[in-house]
Length: 121
Image (tube, rainbow, N blue to C red; front, side, top):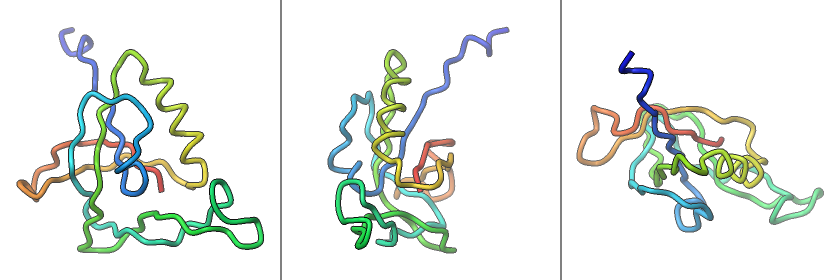
């Protein structure tokens, strides 16, 4: 069928350090937000800051009705998508979840511009 030839794009949404330091190749960058999530400094990290006794704080997002967590979505190139996702799994390992969420822009608050972006929380 024609549909089986369609390659779905892979997008990753960043709301913390990924905004200013992606660290990976991407083919597009879109400023956008996730609905009903808020940015918070609750995530403890001994990875790249802090110690086991005193974990450093890093940003995460949590569900909050009516909130908007702004960030940047990156479209991954098909030819090295697997390597980039492996890099992100290592970089974002302190997060408990990896979800797929819709993303919105200020020009269209009703229709998602990206349907299933990978989000680390």
